[in-house]
Length: 351
Image (cartoon, rainbow, N blue to C red):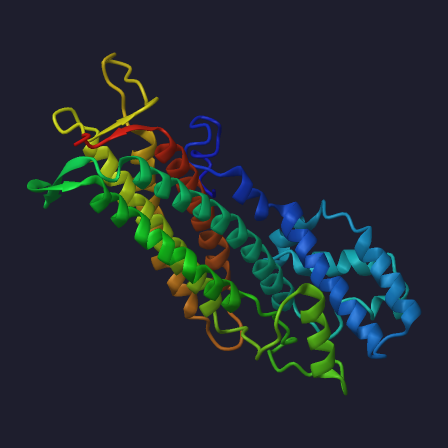
């Protein structure tokens, strides 16, 4: 996550998710930018905008590119693409250099790389969510008929069984899982608009060239969406739903484990520096904290919709700050949830 305090090692893996963080790493993201550039070069060669020989030289440069200095370029240009393109062209003659990036723009590269990154993140999230729903199913099978007091407004209400509460945990997660394909479909659109979003190069094969790039990358081709940030905001909304539903589970468990209520017993738990008898529900508490964090970030991400004119620098940078952090926080919450549910030793009271 972008919080150096959380990722310094002081808190271990409590507030971070190395697997999701790797998806947004410089290496992984550069590889996806290079995948766009390679697909673009291939299409320029396929439709005769450059010669086959020049396209092959450019592809060789793309394949062997070293990304070590992109950060320095970003410090100057505000993003890594100009340095990437300059680096790719630096070893090529004039003809082969024309086979790199001609007709594309930085936003085409960045947005498409972000799409590919988000799709990979969604695959990991849905795999975890699938496992969690299965674990809740197993918990229902094991303990669903056990007795428990239902509570409204944190006060004892009426006798019920465990299934009432666990169903309320499981159902929204299953709904979010069902929605994931819609989010992936929204994301799965290549960004090809050129300098001002008019998609004019290479003539006369603009549509064919763009279509080939989309197909090569496993994406769909639609209208240019430079100033329409709906796709990434939709993913953020999905992450907020998932994290929020996990936070509800965490909040319930933190209340259920209290002495005097004792609706649940967990293996493990965190110790206290001052009170040796305590067994704190750390995972449950972190699920609440992470859910609140993700919800707050969605408010920021939504402001990226205000993407002025044909391209925004400020709104664009806001996406880079918020969406990766939201994804990592949601991923961490899913990991805590899996660990929490599998640590349940007793839930409710046998009838």
